[in-house]
Image (cartoon, rainbow, N blue to C red; front, side, top):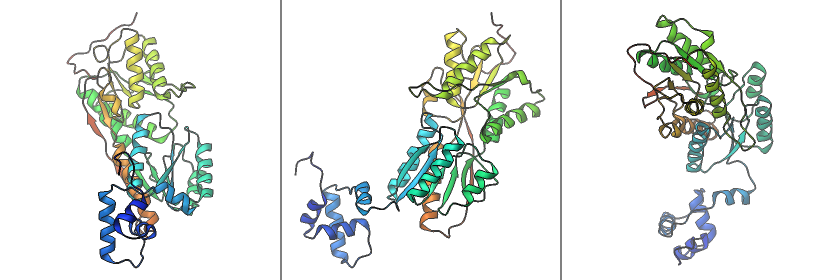
Length: 357
C-alpha cells in the first residue's frame, strides 16, 4: 500500500480475514458475540495499518447527536478561551464525543439562544462559561433536562456542577506581589466590570491594599469599554491600549498596575511604549491568565496563572461522566491561582515617580 494512502475499513477487514461489519463492531466496542481471538486479530491489524475510524462520519451515518455536547464561550479571540476550548476538545476526542462550539460574544441574550438551540439539537450535555448570571438565568439552567457544567466563572449559589477559579485570591496575590516589590501607588485597569470574576479580582485588589494600610484611591480605578474592530481584533487588547492612554492623561504615573487580564496588560504595554513610557522602568504591570503570549511580549509579562488547560479538561471530564453516569455526585471545584514571575515588574526600594509632560 502507498505510504500516502490512508487505510480503510475494507483494508483492515481483508487483512484480518473477516467482514467490514465485524471490524466496525470490534473497533466501536459494541457488545456483540465475537470471539476473543478474532477481536485481538482485528485490533492488531488496525494498529499495523494505522487505521483511524472516521468518528464524525460514523455519527452522521447514524443520524444521531447522542455523542455531541455543546460548548458556550464568550469568545475564542482571547487566547485564554482558545486554550480552554482546545483542552475540552482533546478530552472529548478521547471519549468519542464531538464538541459544538457556540460564541456568546459576552451577550446574555446569545447565551440563552445558544442553550435553546442546543436543546433543540438534542445534544447530550452543555459546557457553559456564563458571563451574566441572575435568578432568571439560574432558573433557566435548573430546567435543563440534560447535564450542564459551568466553568471558568465561579457561582457558589449554582446548585449543579461547576469548575471555577478563585479570582478573589488571584487579585489579592497580584496586588500583594506588587506591594512586596516596593510599590505603593497601584492602579487597577479593566474592561467593563460586568461579570463576577472581574469584580472578585477588584475586591481582592482592594483587600490587599487594605491589609497593607494603603488607602484605595478611586482615581486609580481605570475602566474602559472598547470593542474590537471588524477584523476580529481582540477587544481586550483594544481596552488595554485605551487604558494606557488613560494612564498617560493622568498627572503622574502610578508605581504599578494590576491588569484584569494578559491581553489588557499587553495592550497597555504597547500603548505606553508608543509614547516612550517603558515597562518596568517607568511603571510595573502584572497581568492575569498566563496566556502563551505573555512569555513572548517585551518585556515578558509577570502574571497570575489560571490553569486553562486543566480547567477545560476537568470540566469536560465532569460533563461526560455526568452523561455516562447520571447518578454521579455533583461537584463544585475551585482551582487556585499561582504567581508567574517574569520581567514586567520592577523591584524598588524607594518611590520614584515620573511626571508626565
